[in-house]
Length: 234
Ligand code: 5RP
Image 1: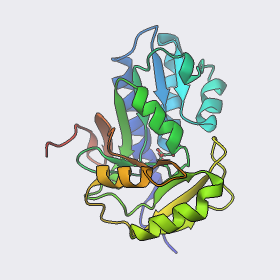
Image 2: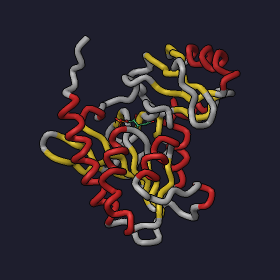
Image 3: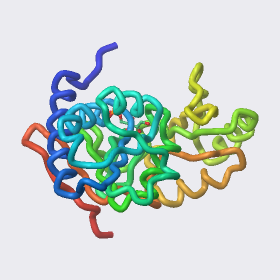
């Protein structure tokens, strides 16, 4: 099987967009600020580039144990979200984004802590390469974090919504739960409605649609440079 994405180019776009995000973030924070940090390869590029500015802010809240390890490796202070009065800005990647900056997230399985950090942050900055831009969410299978004993129940309920759940084998989330990836939901006509419907299934902790709280701003890495995008008006 061949991938139709040039990974070298994709990584270059991720790095470029991560640098643009560092520049943007530095304009928003001060020495007392706590920054929310997402999870995934784009977020990792961001952390690596932010590290040389670590004396310009107080520290970070991490959306996963993986990101926490990288932050600590760079000597960036990591705070528990409960002890952070305020998160000035949350920076994270996405698996898909539409023009309303509604996102599909959770490819790395960190969706619950990502959604919590995004909910708390004053501003949510999404960083992505152009392969993530879509008209409608749902081609990327929708990750759902599920309490382990509810796995089969949630899977049956998701089938009633027209989805095709696949158990992500061998993965336990940072919260001790399992992930179901829901295929064949594309096109998701109303991302908010689907996010709510899935949240209401008993046993679901979180789902990977970030539409009720979308991103506030998107830095999109394209071959023509980094585009700064705001949510489209409906
Ligand atoms: C992790 C996520 C990531 O933001 C998403 O999977 C994008 O990852 P990458 O930056 O590696 O393409 O939601 O749970």
